[in-house]
Image (cartoon, rainbow, N blue to C red; front, side):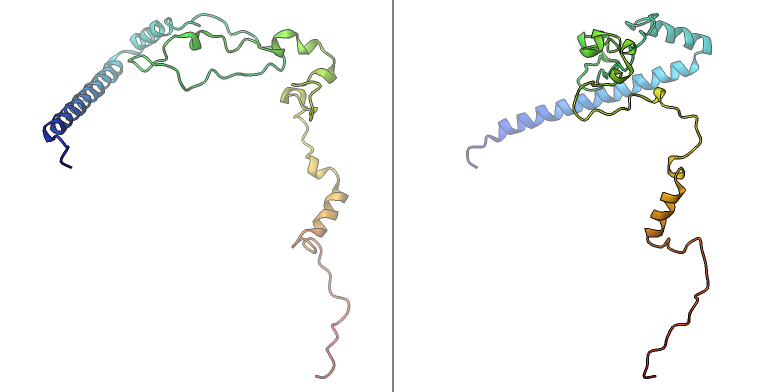
Length: 185
């Protein structure tokens, strides 16, 4: 290329190289600061470390507040782990996303108390298509030791006879008749 200005290209390269070197120096300094902070925390006594942790915890919005009791069958929404800004220490900035109460009921959960409804209506999406009867594990009796697959032994044995390799697995009897030899031998 005759149009390439080598002096301009060199200046661009020099600028990129200086930015790269500056970034490397900053990363090394950051790693050194983190190492010193870890060493400082290790040298603290247990009481000093607990006091420092308590002071850090006081900065949180929900410090000292009791968690609200969730409603019966209330849906859970995660606040998300992505797209949250962080400060220079790596902690999430307290912005509008972090200020929300993610334990608060929304939509149909905020309308009424499902525990007061009839048993039939105590399901997640009542009246919707493909509704299942199962609500949650607390409604199930898990104390019984009877396995469902062992309840009907007649049905189980019928299917075991049809399974490959299970035909005579548990019973052995002698053959009653000898096999006939083919004629011509």
